[in-house]
Length: 83
Image (cartoon, rainbow, N blue to C red; front, side, top):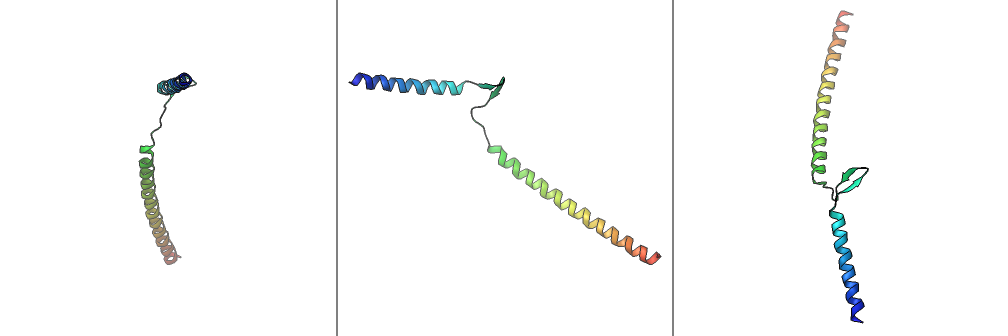
């Protein structure tokens, strides 16, 4: 009865080895290689950088809006003086 247990264990070990080798091969979908592991370590850093750039842009837009408001007020004052 020990023989079926040994053959079963060998079969399981062989399946694991075949599975590992199959995962190492480059998988292709429509001729394009698909990585077996996707690395997301740089994604959070890029999202953080994009957030900082967006914040900087928002600050610049706020400054320009303030300048435009100041110019408009000056134009209204000049219009009142001339009118």
